[in-house]
Length: 280
Image (cartoon, rainbow, N blue to C red; front, side, top):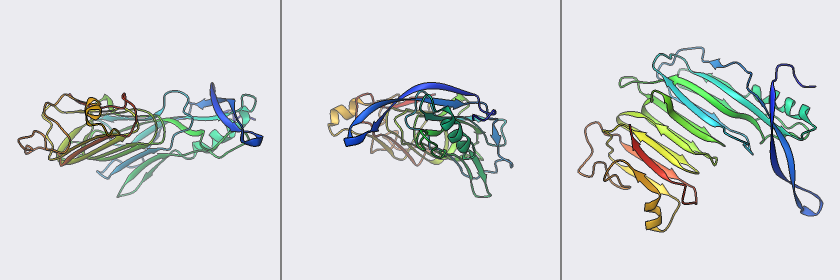
């Protein structure tokens, strides 16, 4: 029986299943969602320790999902909310209910003096509902904005969907930023920095990074999955004249406020798997 605490909404998914003789057939499942769960907040205030946010995601995704990180100048704690989901056969809704119930327990905020970890995993398999097709469809995390005297050490990862950092509200101020999207979604990041910061942003599709207009770097590395130099160049777009891979920026030399490194990579194979560096 479905748990009364779950408000589930469905969308159709098509998956391939193996039948006898190793034949693959298209199979329709429904993705059930639960967006009713209350947000969770850290017990303690953020004291400057590294923050790591990881969403294993669900496969197939079936619509928008991933990780959204928003900063707040008034926030002292870390807060996370999520839309949970699980796929099951359309006449086996109870299977998805059971898997979602498992997944609820995987959304946690782990706190210590050395780190704050926000993570969401998968539910267990129940009947026609699988492990990989369950978990947090999207997590939305609000963190303190950081400052020049108390910058963020922030890591964000996703197994499916988009990663959005600083796309609403203010931008984080970081000393270290590591973004790694292992899914097919886009990556869009806007961030402020402190001198000597390290920025590493990787995606499997289009990657867009927005930086302050006075941005400077001791070293820049921009990489797309393309062996033809001209085609690779066509997939790089920047609002900073003279910003090229393998050199400092500006070319005459990094400024006193420069970051130590800016590394941006798109691992996608197609022409629209671009890198865009813009100003704010």
